[in-house]
Image: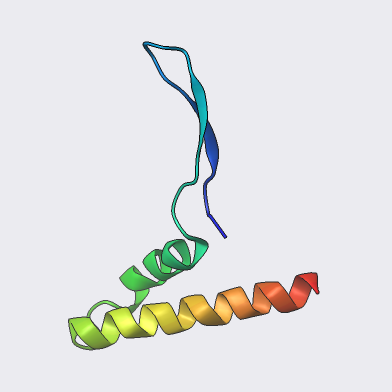
Length: 65
């Protein structure tokens, strides 16, 4: 799933295309990263951010089932 899909109109040709945006998992992980920084080394911090992102996606899926 994508976090920010949007329509993009090319400024020269006027052609409109759908830009997919970033993955929702990456967006969630990026939101957690500042909260985790400084609490552990960088590699563990990033791994923790993705674990949180996975939990958020799981909770989201359970909500819409």
